[in-house]
Image 1 (cartoon, helix red, strand yellow):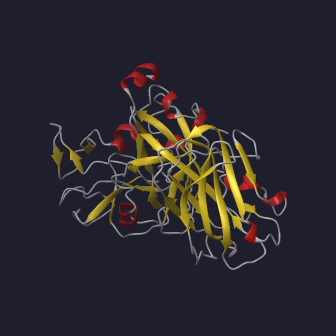
Image 2 (image 1 turned 90 degrees about the vertical axis):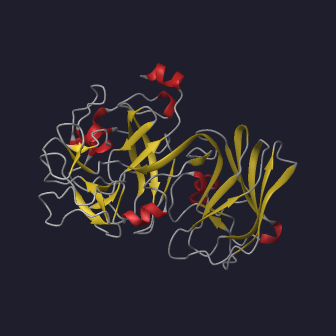
Image 3 (image 1 turned 180 degrees about the vertical axis):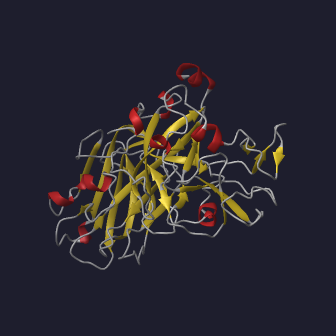
Length: 386
C-alpha cells in the first residue's frame, strides 16, 4: 500500500507523529447523502479517486498535522452540500463514542479471530465475506434451500473477551436479508446470552446496499458474538448478509468534522479586515492556510505540495461563515454575506487566501467534503511521538 508521497503509514493513532499518515475508509453509496467512516488504520480497499466521486467507497489517508488533529489528503466526496454535511454533524463534528471492533477478514481465521456460520451457499459466499469490509454483491449466504426453521447463524470469535454494545448490518439488496433474529454473546460457544432481539425487519432496499444500526445495553465481556436468524425477507432459498459490524466503546472520543479556513482577511496588526491586504486569512491559525498551504509538517513535506493535499482539483467545504461584507475575492463580484459558506482550493489559486463563497445548499461536482479527525491524545503520548 503506497502512502502519499512516501509518508510513513501507521496502523494506530498512538504511534503517529506529525507528518505520518493512517488509512481510513469512507463509504457513501448514495450521491448527495453523507456516508460513514470505518477501518481506521486497517483499510486495504481501493483508493477513493483524488479527482472526486459522488459515491465513494474506499481508502483515503489522514495526515497528522498537530496533536490530536489529522487532515484528509483529498476531498473524499463531491456533489454534497454544506447543509447535508451539517445535518450529518460533519461540519463542527460529533464525538464518536464507538469504534468497529472487527478486523478486515481475509479468510475465516485471518488476520485474527475466527468466523463460523451454520452453513454457506458456496466458497464464493463464505462466512468471512460478511466481515471483509467490502460492500458488494457477495457477502455471506447460507446453504441453498436451508430451512430457516433450523435457524441459520453467523458468528465472530474474538481472541479475548470484549464488550460489544451495538452492531450494524448491510443487506445484499437481494431480498434475502434477515427478518427476525437474536444477537447473542458467549464465552464458551455453548452458553449464550441474548443481548438484542429484532423482529419484522422488513422492506430492506433492493436497489442500494442498505445499512441498519442496532444498539443495546451490555456491560459484560464476551469472546463470541452471534446473529441467530429465525426468518428472512421474501426469498425462501437462503438468507444473506453483505457486511456485519460490531462496535465497542471508544475511549478516545474521536470526531470527524470539516476544516477551518478563516472568515476574513488579515491586516498588518493581526486583526480582521474586509478588504484584501495580501497578508492571508484571519485568523491566521486557520487549518487551511496553517497546514495545507504553509506547513512542511516538521520537514516531511514541501509546503503547499498538491501531490500531498490535492487541493487544486476540488474545492473543500469549510466550517466558516464569512464576516458580513468581507472576503469578496477577485473571482466574484458579490459581497460576502453571512448566508454563504466558504470553500477553499482550486486550480487557479496562486495567491492566498483565495476562496469561493457558496450558499449552504449548493451541490457541485468539484466541491465536497475533506474531513478532519480530532481525538483525545494524552500528554504522555505526545512526549513520545513528537
